[in-house]
Length: 482
Image 1 (cartoon, rainbow, N blue to C red):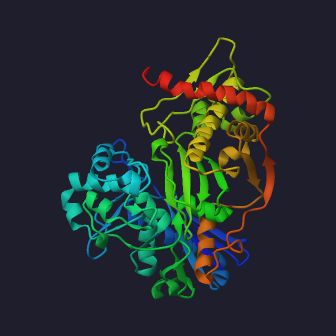
Image 2 (tube, rainbow, N blue to C red):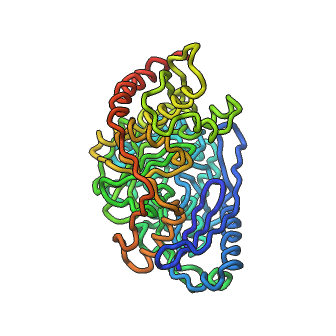
């Protein structure tokens, strides 16, 4: 048995799988986010432990016999959060989360201090860890001065599980302190933020052993003192669950926000187009991501405006659209990440006329999100990363019409997995197996069975190629209107 623990923003999920990676049991425990000021987002690390205890207590109560055969634990979690500890490992302040936007000014400061773009391989954005911690240094100097260790969220869980200060490459790359090409902390980037290497955790690969479960916790849950894998950040863990480990493979996550994830065997950043370039969770492998901020959230917004439920709206669009909508839509309702890197980008309908009805507006929203993904495909290719096929996951992937539009607009062959849970907790469980057995090949990281395959419709793709050109003109044309 292998256990994957995923620390999400809204809950902790614990998944127990057997040696064939079939799901044995799943347990959840909820979390809340504190927003003490507009644009702030924080959580108390103690709540992560309480939620994890609850989830594992549930597993022992429901599947104690299976849990007793545990061979390894893997961790995944939301990235970029800064958990500050003093010399006795006491938490100094709530963790500033990935979606906290307070550190915009500090991004400009850090960009001017060191070559974050070249060394870390990413733009300095408020979502990353380094600018958050510079904000602490400038606004809470008494906290900053007491900081002996900085841990990412899932790595604070690891400290509780094992007693070890350890991180792994995929999550560490999201701090902006990692030399992403060399897979090691950068003294230059740490110094620019006021830190030293001694304040960072040790680094392992995600498929390596990072420590062993503490005796008192093993006794509590009736399990051996099993190894705990390095694990992965949430997107890299999802990729591990889906077997997206080699060049040419990827996944397209059509959730509240959107992610196009592609594996690579080279470090090849493209900061000019706001591509995220991180280490993957296994050695000598990297990954790149295009990130859009309003994917299914664009449909949620339209649902709120119209008073119609999202599934009802999606049902207004034919399963196999024959032509683009006459209306255009820019999906920048919360700003945009890739490729614009503009938190002030705004959404818009373009080309509205009196005879345009709701079905065309729904199709236009789907198309606008698809074109945002086409942007991601384009800039990943500029970085030398080719993606031909991608597994389609997330709530939006339940709409056949949206997937048909997405395939035609992006040129990707979309693969819909057969039934199963291929999220971050499942990937963490696979990393537990890798750490316990030493295997990192397809025997662990196999790709899921494909339930449906959607190839780009050639006629629709030609029509969307013309509309995409108009879409690309939309952002600069509307940028200064609001």
